[in-house]
Length: 357
Image 1 (spheres, rainbow, N blue to C red):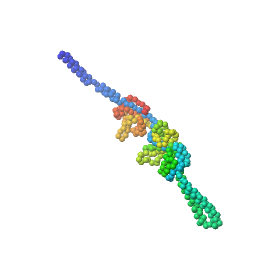
Image 2: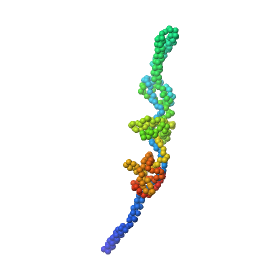
Image 3: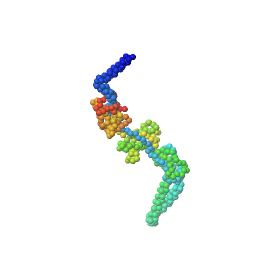
Image 4: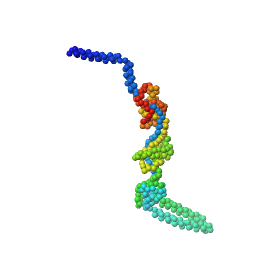
């Protein structure tokens, strides 16, 4: 038993000695090769070759549709409705009588004034003949003229009062829902109905102040409705002449070129505003950017080594960003493994592409 135990102890000692001897005689170059191979495996990176691309600077804002002309119909004087012509949802021409208030007392006064004018006209004609024959003084004649003109003025005032008992269509349009019935007593504050033009629709929206200088009259915009993917077009016709102090936005108005049952005044719209196009923009993937405290940098491959370059950026979209200064077409930009690279590090590529997502 002692002999067997001694043999096992000797075997174990031999194994341990062999391990330490191997470690002692391993060449440093072998260790370096092993570490280099690990380093090379870690430094495999993806790269993108820069080329000019089309960049569309577009923003999305919320807008609302409005009737080109829209008015709340209200009467100018208080009174009782005796005639009603408000065909809900129907088209009416400009000048159509929509609402008539009681005006019998005003009409009676008008007839009285017209009768007085007729009598004074006869007196005026007789006195004109008498004046030629020196049968009347000039002063009496002038008093008659003054009275005639005064009655005519009173008649015009009375006709104006009568016109105020009528509500006429101010323009061609479609009548909304009526709020009154015949016999109702109304005041100037009473809403009778609404009228909206049907041929044209306006689109109102606001843009941040930094884009204010880009918005020009005649500029085309596209928009969609919240409940449909159909795309419509509109042309900018005007902007407010100042930035809103509360929202820091510029209000813009456009005229819609399309006609559709989906375009209902008051509805919300998603407006796509194309501000500019650049066919020679230098775009790179956003993950290639290394943000720093006061600048941004990227890693450019030169002669197989990594070099850090400070760049200026422009427009950013979902996956790419514009570089306005710092690179040239044909440069190879590192897009992955950025944390493992240092200035002058050798590069080992896993993939190189010239296509953007």
